[in-house]
Amino acid sequence: MTQLEFVNTVKRLEDKMFRLAKMMLISTDEAADAVQEVFTKLWVKKDQLNRISNQDAYFMRAVRNYCLDRIKSKQAKESRLDSVAFMMQTQSVEHKYDTKEAVGMVEQMLWQLPEKQRLIIQLRDVEGYEFKEIAEILNMNENAIRTALSRARKTLKNALIKQYEYGIQEHRQYS
Image (cartoon, rainbow, N blue to C red; front, top):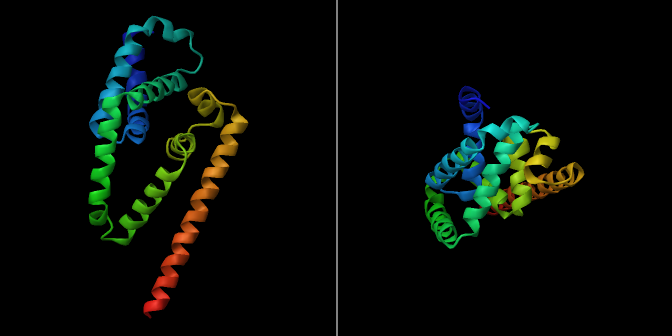
């Protein structure tokens, strides 16, 4: 892979890679660092990248694997807990407007899902990857991806319905 081809691939995938890293690591700074580290590692292997049939999936898998390694490290765990605590403290500020409240509610519900389901929703519904590409990125069977996505969506749907019904019941009590 030439330098120009590498730069073009990096430019094309950088945002997707960052969003995946941010979803996994929570911290914007850690996500940016993760993407840069992955680019550095891939640059070293640039001569081998032409042999890879799906370079997009390879780059995304590299980010996923790097993030998993960071999450496993003690430092990342402490940073992640701090970030979650900070997000929980600022959450009430974000819920001032109905739109922000709905987004925050869905985001919370997403964090209640198992990690694989969260990753699959991120890759499929946010990033727009095909099932085959997600299977390559996550090293899973396509049917397992479809099943996990279906279960995740059903869980989110039921949680939203439950939350919506709770809001209606609470409103009726005060009316």
